[in-house]
Length: 129
Image (cartoon, rainbow, N blue to C red; front, side, top):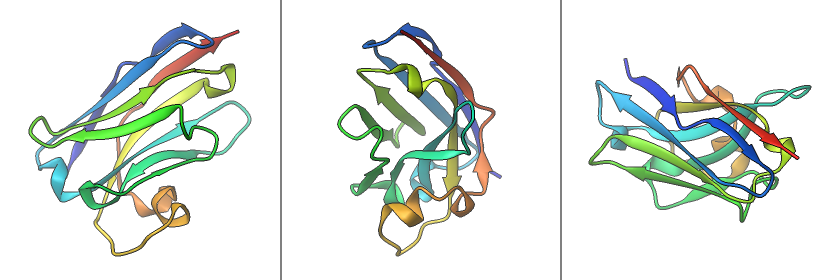
């Protein structure tokens, strides 16, 4: 089974940037669809961004659109999340996830955590005001 290990979390002031990484092992990340989710205080797990079937179609939650960018380097089997203009409400645990490829379209599918069956341990992001 695929294993995912996130890194890059930390503490930053509002307006700052962080880049999260997710290293995939055992299988090529190009064989999966990959996504980022987060768990923020008082909220359920939220889909942040996803790459459909390895690209090029990408999906973003409205709350992060134009601030976050998801990308994938298949040569390195690594998924990234570039987060700019961070806000205190972005604070939470960020998880990388992998799931089977699908012919589906749309954020309701690709940002649904039930569509992913392999999860990393998470990396904490804290944004202070």
